[in-house]
Image (cartoon, rainbow over the protein chains, first blue to last red):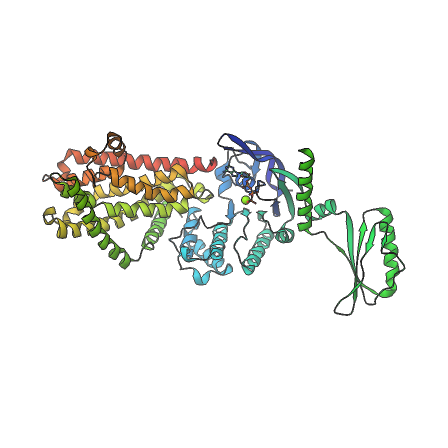
Length: 326
Length: 259
Ligand SMILES: Nc1ncnc2c1ncn2[C@@H]1O[C@H](COP(=O)(O)OP(=O)(O)OP(=O)(O)O)[C@@H](O)[C@H]1O
Ligand SMILES: [Mg+2]
C-alpha cells in the first residue's frame, strides 16, 4: 500500500497575545494514494490548520509529517510543485485579469509549455462552464464563477495530491455536481484528494476514509462502513412486500421494533424493522422474515446509518464527555 | 517554458493587468481634472506658507504625484491578490523568477507612470508655469523616472510584505499616501517640518525622487553633471534593492509562520 501522507503526533500551537492556543494536537494518521480522505469536524476543530501543515504553508510545532514521501521540514519545495490547494473565498485570483489570463498566469508559475497550457485551459474552462466568460475580467465574476476559476487554477498543473478546504462553498447545485464528478474522475486517475466539508452527504458520497477532528484531536477515523459499524447500535432493515402482512409477532420483542407497515404508491407495502446487535435479536429477526415470506418479499435492504447521524452522535458524545470532566 | 519565456509571458500579462485597471478615456479625463485641481490646491497651500519660490516649489513636486499615486494603488491592487497567505504556487518558483516577475511588472508600471508624468508635465508647463521648459526634456530624465517607479513599487511591496493581512493592507496605501503628501517635500518644504518628520522623510523614496526631479528641472546646469542628482539616484537604487529583498525574504518566512 502506498501512502501519500504519513503524520505522526502532529501538533500546532498559535501564540495569541501571550495565550497559547493548541489548534491541533497529536494527530496520527495516514492517507492512501488514490483515495479521497475526508477531514470532518465542527468549526474551529483544526481542519484547515491540519491541511495547511500538509501543504507546507504552516510549520508544525512538533511531530513528523511526510507528504508524497518527502519530509515537510526539508523537502517542502519538492512537495509544492506536486500539490494543489483549493480553498473557498474571493482572494487568490488576479481581479484585473480575465479568467483565461488568470489561468495563464498560474500555469506559467508551474512552467507548463505554452501550447500544453492553452490546451489545458480550454479543457478546464469548458468543463467548468466558463468558456463564455473566459475573456471577462475576474472582478466581474460572481462568487460561484470565481470558485469555478479557483478549481481550474488548482488543477491546471495536474497535481498528484489535492487539498480541498470546503471547495463547494458558494457553488450552485450544478457546480457542486460538476466538482464532485471532477473529484471522482481525479480519483479514478490515481490522484489523491484530502477534503474538508460541512456537507455530510458530500462526504458520504465521496470519501473512502474519514477522520473526525474535534478540539484539535482525532476522535475517530475509518471507512464509512467502519464508522457505521462502530456507531450503529442496531441494524435497520426495510422490507418490501407485495401484500399487506398480518404478523403474529408483537410490535416489540427483544428490543426489536417493528414499525406499522405503510402502503406505497405502487401498491406494495413497506415495513421498517430495527434489530439490536444481539444474537437473540438476530434470531428473532430471522423468524420474522420467515413469517413474512407468504406475503411475497420483493426486497430486503439493510439501511445504513447516515453520516450526518454519525457526526451528530460523535459531537454530542464528545460534549457530554467534556461535561462530566469539567 | 524557460526563464526568459516565463518572464516575457508574465510581463505581457502584467501589461494586460494594468491596461484593465482603468479605461483610457476615464483615465485621461480624471487625470486632467485631477492635475488641475491638485495644482491649484498646492499653489493655494504654498501661498499660505508664503516665502520666495513656494509656488514653483509646489509645482515641481506636483508633477510626480499623480504617477506616485497610480503606482501605489496599482501595487496594492496586484499585491492584494498576491499577499493571500494561501498562495503555494508563488512558493514553487525560485526567488530569481519571482524577482524577475516583479521587475518586469515594475517596468510595465513605469511605462504607465512615465506617460502620466509626461502628461502632467505638459499640462503644468504649458498652463501654469510657462517658463518650466520644454516637455521633451523629460525624455532625458528616463533613468531617473525608472528608478522613481522601481523605488515607489518597492516601497509598496515592502509595505505589503510587512503585514500580509488583507484588512491592514487595504488601509495602508491610503494611509501611506497622506504620510507621503506630508513628508514628500512637495507640499511643504521638509525644513519647515518638525525634526521627527524630517528624519522620517529620509526613509521615503518619494522624497528623494522629488528632490532629484526638482534638481533636474530647476538647475540650469544639465542634470548629468549635478552630483546631487547622483546621490539621490544612489539612494533610490538602495531603496529598490532593500524593498525587493525584504519582499522576497518575507514571501517564504511570513507564510510559514503566520501571526
Ligand atoms: N493564524 C492563527 N492565529 C491564531 N489562531 C489560529 C490561527 N489559525 C487558526 N487558529 C485557531 O486554531 C483553531 C483551529 O482553526 P482551523 O481554522 O484549523 O479550524 P477549522 O476546523 O478549519 O474550522 P472551520 O470549519 O471553521 O473552517 C481555532 O481555534 C482557531 O482560532
Ligand atoms: Mg477551515
